[in-house]
Structures are given as structure tokens and as C-alpha cells.
Amino acid sequence: MLTISCLFGGLLSALPVEAQETPKSAKRGSLIVEENKLPGATDWQLTRVRPDNKGHRTPWIEGYCSRQSVKAGESIDIMVSSDPPQPFKIEVFRMGYYGGRGARLMTTLGPFEGQTQPVPTPGKKNLHECRWEATTQLTIPDDWLSGVYLGRLTTLPSEADRPYWQSYIVFVVRDDRPANILFQCSDNTWQAYNQWPSNYSIYTHPKGVQGPWADVSFDRPYGREAQYNGVVNDPLTFGSGEFLPLEFPLAYWLEKHGYDVTYCCNSDMLTPEHGLKCKSFISVGHDEYWDIRQFRSVEKMRDAGVNLLFLSGNSICWVTPFRASSDGRENRIIFRGGPYGAKNDYALLRERLHGPFPEHGPDEGLLMGARNVEPVNGGGDWTITKPEHWIFAGTNVKAGDRIPGLIGWEYHGAPAKIPGLEIVAAGTAFQGGENPQQWTATIYPGPKDNFVFNAATIFWAQGLSSPPGHTLPWSHFSRPHGPDPRVQQITHNLLQRAIDGKQ
Image (cartoon, rainbow, N blue to C red; front, side, top):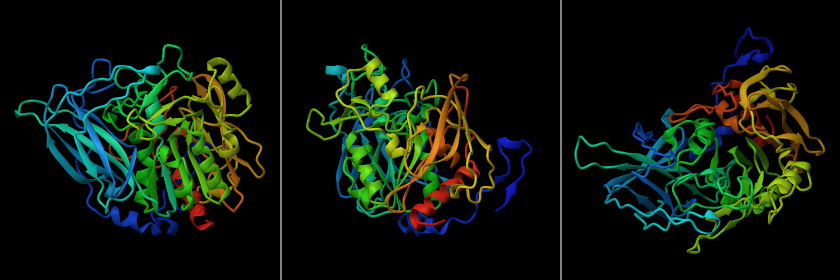
């Protein structure tokens, strides 16, 4: 493998150039390979976006879907509001690689006559549940491959010299097929932080920001990426949750290399059936909120031999029970039900400071390998401690080499006592830019020659690619640098082992 010398000692050492040849294990994803040969869209991003005066929403055009995910052959309702009422169209894109363009236009719907739909009166526990009229119903064609789909809403002014406005809707097309990789979107967390319409989220109840006081509904638009003042200052995220900044770099990279990947939402993991058909499961980005049934599903998958890759941070932190919407659609309302962590000190502290909670989760470290810690946020370099481990094959790294800014803005530490667990990277993150906290990346063997890897950072995907429409995050005075050949090679090594059982 080619390398580039570096003069900065232990910070970067010798950087391998990403291999031009895709690993053989990736080339078996024929559905993904064939899909990404199709023409990519040259125009799928938001061009004109207008936040309201509070910055949380774009009432000129916004919408949501009736379900988080849907299978081919099933239908999904799309609800849209425009204020003032204006005609609009919806362009639906599948997100992937597509020769570097990042998306493919699947269909265009409309034009539709716009209507201003009501902002809901807050219900019990500050619930904002929209009950908008459906603008249209989309039946998913049989040839639409599993993936993350963005619908771009664009107003259609009646006069050429009037401005148009845009935002997204987002949904997942899922399937039940066996696959090498099951990619779980972290949409519970997107919704927990979603501040639509005016700073209402799990974190904004008058009783406190960390208690069980607030309910949030998937029956409302996603506003701007919720932590835009502290993490991703990008208005082009309106309507897409946290997918574009935190998860799309992984999906783009997997599809670029032809990996056999299928996609799901958090709510699709309440039972393990699909996961048991797959060779590996990936948690990505900011995956903080899990229903306990998700935990038990992934636990069963591990015990059955599925490889688990936590390419995420602050994961499995809070128990998030689902309940149905007011009209009976399942899994549309969530709240912070209680901490994971069993009887560990940090879980008892959360109970003491923010409870009482109705639910308590098991020790997430016994599944992930490393746990959430307090404080759980900060920024730092991903520092290698065990360069001889097989995950580092082909990277030419040494102990103490650092990947700048890859830790953040939340992470894992405090490794669990699991037989065979190894610490492959560890170091210090700095909360608030100065206060030190320890993080730990781990790997441990599963019961059937499988493994569980914990990258211990929300930012892992930032080291894989920088696709169109993506903005690098920044937090705690620290930032990742974007694609890094070592992160790419480590991820290839992990997936090759997961798929083939060997490097």
C-alpha cells in the first residue's frame, strides 16, 4: 500500500492512501452495484432555504411522512404545508453514491396546490402532534431498492421574479432480504432533538431538560438540524433530521464500494428477524435513544453470530419507549423513559438528578463494550493504543498515532468487563474545550466467531467520505478533518472480517 510521509511525528505518522481496489467482500453487493450504475442527479440539494425568525422551521414549505419506513409495494402519506399557500412539487431521491453525485431522482410528484396547515396546540407533556391532511400518497414501486430517501419540496411561484423556497421530507425504504450489512438510521435521536415548531423537543420542557417530562411525535416536520449553533451550522438540513451531516458519509462510502447494504430505522429493530438474516449490523452517528426492545433484538443478533459495529457515540444512552399516534399508527411517539446503565454510578446519578423515571435499561456496556460516561461530550483525537490488532492491518499506524478531531461531540468510555475485550484506541476528550474526560474504543469476541466493535465517537463517518451536501461538524472547539485513509482501511478491515470471517 502506498503511503505518504508526514513530518509531525505521532500526530499522523505514515498515512496510507486509500486502496483503489475495493475489497472482494464488498463486490458481492450486486443490487447496490447495479443501483449505483444508474444516472445520479446533478440537482438534489436544497438551494433556497429560509428559516423563520426563531431559526427552527421553514413555514414557507415543510412536511412530514406518515411512517418512518416503508417496504416496496406499501404506501406512505406525505403531508405538506406552505405559508402563504403556494403551488409546489416533490422530487424524491434515493441517497447513495451514483458516480459521486450522491443521489438519484426516482420520481417527481405534483404540482400540488399548497395549503397552510395548522401548528398543533400542545398536548399533554408538551406533545406537538400534527394532524395534517395528506397532500399525496406514494406507493413504493417494486424496483425501489432499500435506502434513505429524501423528498425535496419546492414552491412554484406564479411569476418569474418571485423567489422559490425548499425543504426536505425523509423516509426509509426497507426490505427483509438477507444482506451483508444492516444500516440502522438513528431517527429516534433525530426526533428527540427536533425543535419544530418553536423550540419544542425532549429537551425543552419547563420541568427540566433531562427528565421524562416531554413527549415528541414523528407526526411533524423535521426542522433545521437541532444543534446548529453548537455542532452543524448548516441550514440545508431542513427536513432531513441528522442524516446528511452524521450518517450520509457512511452510506455514500458503503455504496461507493459496492457493499451489500440494506437500511432500516430504529423502530424496525423492535424485533430481531431482519437483523438475524444479515452478517453485520451498524449503528451510526448519534444513536442515543433506543427502546429496550431494540436492545434485546441486537443482543439476540450478537448471540446468534451477527457482527455489531457501533460506528457511533452516546449510543444506547436513554430508554425510549414507543407508543402509537392518536389515530393508532404504531411507533409514532417517544419520550425519555429512563437511563440505560443498570446500577452503574452514572445511571444512578441520572435517576437522582432527573427522575423518577418509569423505565430503566440494562448496562449498555455489556452489549457495546464501552459505556456512556459523564460528561459525555467534548472533542479530541482518536489515539491508537494497539496497532498490532487486525483492525489496523494495512494502515502502518504506531501506538500513539492520532486521527485529529475524530472524537466528538459525544463518545463512549468505561469499558465493560467482557472476556476477550481489547482496547484498541483510547485518550482524552476535552469538554468545553478544556475539561478532560476519557474515551475508549473497544472490540470483543462474540459467541460464534463474530465480534462487536465500538468506535466510541459520533464522528466516525466523517473519516469515511465527504459527499455532496455534507458539512463537517464542529463542537467543543474541535473538529474532524474529513476523509482519512486510516479510518477507511479500518472500516474495510472490520467489514471484510464481518462478511468473510477473515481479512
